[in-house]
Length: 328
Image (cartoon, rainbow, N blue to C red; front, top):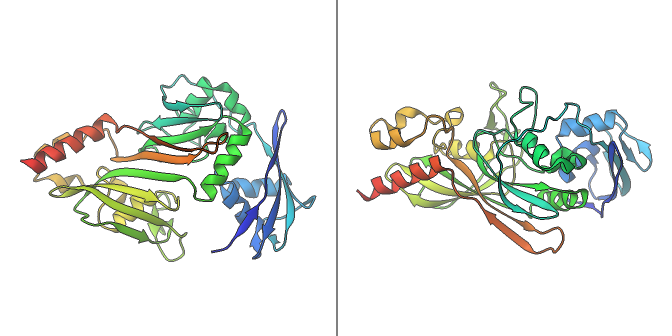
């Protein structure tokens, strides 16, 4: 695995910009956009490439191009515009706050809520709700959200309240020092722990989906059965990497799709012979996948923090029915 060393980042906050200044040490030549996407996982590669095109990124005081490679130590300066290209509208949306400190907020996101605004989703997102409740987050990139959950995945997200915690926690995320544990109800039985290491990339035909293929990005999921039922399993999944739809793709690859996840292989007919289970599945609850626990180091104290989030009621109802059915 390639090693890149990012020294301490210095922050300056101005009216329209956040400025990041840091030293980058490189052992193996690599493209600048790829390196920065590793260090700033909360920004997409296309966003970083746009910064490069706009000359918002300087390497040793000079602008660079997207194809430029860094092969030795250098000084990096990034001027990040804080005003979004799309006007973020504050909305009074109910948010389940698990913890609130001066540095961060831990949120239990509901299923069915989009994390960030995007084309087609300018309102009703978690980001809109956070901006209403915490207007000071407008001074933090992406309203302080450093990782995301799919629209129909419920559970824990951490939101940074200032630039220092934003970078501190982003770096932990990049260095895989965040521990993210998910729980899911899946079809068929998984009777032993599995480590699945299969690359994930865009589906060659349906570009809205992800799939496993040789040219995809490296992805590792650790899967452990919590309870094995007659025809389903309650599993725990630890993400070692964080690819788009990773858990859903890996479980589908094992022929154990998440219950309710029709995009990745779940079929309602699976429970044709289990009418009680079929009737318990809420048709308005898209998938039974929940970000159950999150662990990271506190930005101020460096103390290890661990948070857990209760299951949504729809998830609990199905889990209880499966337990009851298993004991009959």
